[in-house]
Length: 267
Image (cartoon, rainbow, N blue to C red; front, side, top):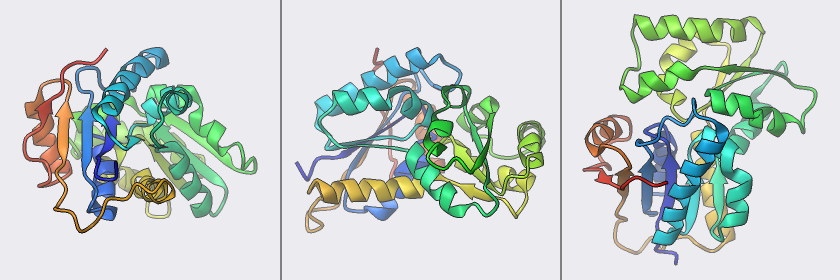
């Protein structure tokens, strides 16, 4: 079982930020990444629909023999986490709690902004996660068009900057000193987000913290792969057209992506 891959899912290419961190921190571990591009992005969809699509992908990953599932999507984490923990026997790691822990440690004035998709913000999953620290002031903001830009491969330019000001200026005006990038697509827009928010605002990317959680869970369950084994083989799958996914995945993740496979459309 220790030679089995880690399954990582997202609605598209955003979860590659988490995959990159996992590959960097755990270079001996193979991964299987599924981008549910036939149904993504998840953010604008109702929570029930997100839950159905994400659980279908996770069902397939578990059936294929992964030793762990990483929900590398905030919308899917908010929609499925409770059900997934009851549904699967393999360890499960998600992206919300790691980001919250890091934000609580990073804030200096107790004012934290959270940006995410409509589904994530509407779920109030971050407010629930921050509830253990009631002294904090949380300012949430849905930024749905950010995902559209990333999925088109656009990470700069005047149009994106204008949209970013529209979303982020009210968050900045609230006096936050820490901003949670509550969507795994958003780290790919760090340049424009940091430019609008200013250098004094700390951006929290959950990818690195999530990868640390992956390591902790592997160790706790005795699932680490023997580093003496041959170099791991990674797989990247898209439920939609694999060509544009492959192109963006190579750009955002790197040479580990050769050719993405077509995964078929899950329910």
